[in-house]
Structures are given as structure tokens and as C-alpha cells.
Image (cartoon, rainbow, N blue to C red):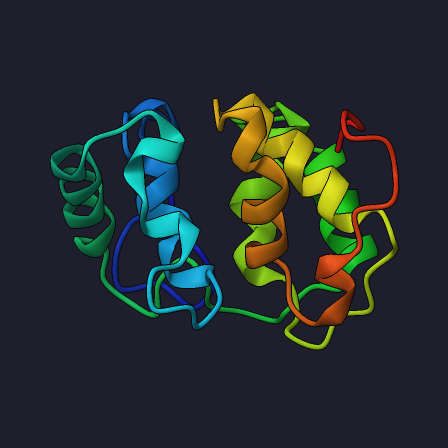
Length: 158
């Protein structure tokens, strides 16, 4: 399959990667805040080892081109809509996993609702992040001051 803007090579299916131990720590790592030890770099929060994260990082780095975060940034409503409405041929249909896959595309200055961090925390629960770390990790993955607002119920689905 060729993708517009990437006519020089095929698009490689990567849905198997989301099931690999270490995927979420590797995938979300570059998206965390500027903290010297951001939570996404702690593989144990995702039930993984540093070696598993490195193996996935190498697999992700093997792709040519601008990378998975290239393209137009999404607003929060656009991100939620895309997460909740997979295409007919989309192999990843769990809306929580889709939300995490799309999260790096969230615009840095996106206006976020009060429950954005709760929604992300719910998605993190779906990939095995322990309850004691979900809220803090969700906040670190969202841009701006709205990321600190955890005012809605803790188990809201994406």
C-alpha cells in the first residue's frame, strides 16, 4: 500500500507492535514532558523491561521518512473522533489504544476539556499501566495547564 507523501516505499503494517512488551514505553517516550526522567521512560510502568523497550525502539526507528508524528496536528475533538471511529479496514479498533496511538498528534496548544487527563488515564489502564501511576502519566502526556486537571471520575472511557 502506498500512502500519499510516501510514494517512495510501501506502508508497513505495524499493528503487531502494539502488542509487544515495551511498545507503549517506547512509543510514548518522545511525547512526554521535558522532565529529566519523564514517566514514559520508566518501562516498569508499562510492564516492560529496558531491553524490551529498546527492541521496540529499534523497530520503530527502522521506518524511513518523517516518522509517526508527522502531519497536521489534531485538536482534542479531532483526536477523540479519530480514536472512536476507526475505518473499515483499520486493524486497531479499541478506541483507548487508538487514542494513545494518536496522542502524539495532539496540537501543542490544543484546548483541552477538564476531563482530558481522565480520558488518557482510562486509555493507559487499557495497556496495563498501574492505577497508582495513571493520573501522573496522563498529565505528563498532555500539553499545557489543562493537563493538570483531574476532576472527573477516574474510570471514564476514551
